[in-house]
Structure formats: C-alpha cells, structure tokens
Image 1 (cartoon, rainbow, N blue to C red):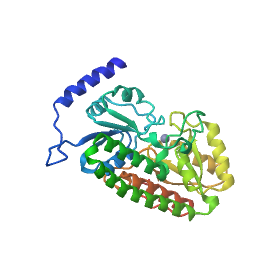
Image 2 (cartoon, protein in one colour):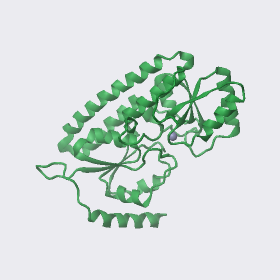
Image 3 (cartoon, rainbow, N blue to C red):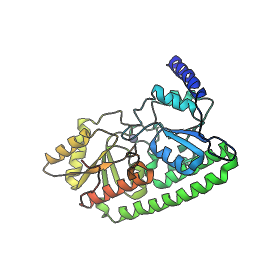
Length: 317
Ligand SMILES: [Zn+2]
C-alpha cells in the first residue's frame, strides 16, 4: 500500500510539473490557490469563502458515500497538485486516512477542528467515536466556514480581508438558513417531529431543530441494518403512527423499503416521504447541488411529509 501511494505521488508530481495555473490576480499574475475538498459540502463553502482567489476541486460527487469512499489514482493526482486539502475529519473519510497522511508537503486541515468538543455528539454505535455529520446543524457549519476563512487567510495573508468579507456575506446567508430550518421545524406539531432515515446521520439535525431521530444503520454505513433493527423500528413507527420515513441520496433505498413493508405488515401505512441529501449534495447546477440548497431541500421534504403534505421534490421517484 505504501509503495503504491509513493508511486502514485511520484506520477502526480510529474503530472503537476506539466500543468499551468490560472492567474487569480491579473495585475500581479499570482496564481489561484488550488484547494481540494473531500465532500461537496466543504467544497461549496470553500468556493464561497475563497471566491476568485481559489480553484476548488471536490473529490466526492453526488450520491457518493464518504464512509466507504476510497481515493482513486486520479484523486491522488488531484490531491498531490493541491495547495490546501480540506477534509471533514471525525472519521468521516474513514478509508482515506492513509492517503491524507501521506500529503506531507501540503496544508492538510480537518475543517471540524475548531468545533468545540462539547458541541460534538458521541456516535450511538461506537462509544468513544464522535458523530461526524456536523453539517446538519447549520450553526456548526458556520464555525466550519469561519475555520476555512482562517485557513485561507493564513495561507494567503495578503488577501485576508477579501476572505473575511466573503465569509461574512456567506455566514449571513447561513444564519438566515438556520432561522428558516427552525421556523419550519417549529411549525410541526411536537409529536410529529420524528425523523426516520436510512442511516444515523441526522443526530445533529435532531438536536439543533428538536427532532427525535432514528437511523436504520449505525453512524457509518459499513454495518448493514439487521432484521432486529427493522423489527424494532417497524413496531415503533406503527405504535406512534409516524406518517413518513425517508431515503437518502447516498444510501441504497432497499433498507428503507424493507422497513416500510414491515410497518405495512403491522397494519399501518407509512409513506416514503422523499429523498434527503445526507452525506452528499445533489447534482451541480441544481439548487440541491449547494450546501444551502441541500439543507433547504431536506427541511422542506421532512416538514411537508411529516405534516402530511406530499413533497414536490423533483428527486422523488
Ligand atoms: Zn454518514
């Protein structure tokens, strides 16, 4: 494995030597900073904060599950060309630790690094591991945006004011988003605020916006949901008459469909309330292909379905 990484790095260095970079500053001819982000939610914040001074590449596209993602040879090349590498951390990119560790001559930063420890939730499955899904609490992702701003300002101090003013403008939009999610959640009756999804990604969401949260799989998607998990949740849904459960864009639907069938066999009909974007954003060029659009889509889908309204999401199959 180590030899492979070394060989790939060497290839990347050769490739890098042949590349030219777009100038970010027409007057000085200074190049744009190359930023590589693992998940789309980080790439989007980096673009908003870095503006024209950065070129951002995201490794994981729509529908990709970061818990299981392994870097390809092409990714190693992209990572080797980067000036700054941003990843979530908290073991989200569990299979990329080795590769990230080998990128020694770069600024490699876990964007979750500045979130205060007392605001981190502990994984339900692994007692000593934190839950990595911090982007679901918009106020935590604001801390991440601030961190990314500081990382850029430290790397490129000449333009620190530029990053700061971009970050301020973006954080204003994020604060409005946070208020919007709270308003839609509060409009639901309290006993309707129960969110059941394919995997255990929504605990930060639940804590921030007042939902009880249950996932069919553990925090990571590596462990398949067992028959006992399905039975337990099906009993709960039928007893509480929960109107809707949700599929996720980066997780196969079959487990949620099996749960729906199990609830039906208990004489209660639970709808599949729509598709949520959990660990990956939607297609680029669509509203859900941005962090803000993704969070909006999720709360609209959740609030409509739990209120008994049909979601008008274009992604619903
Ligand atoms: Zn996840």
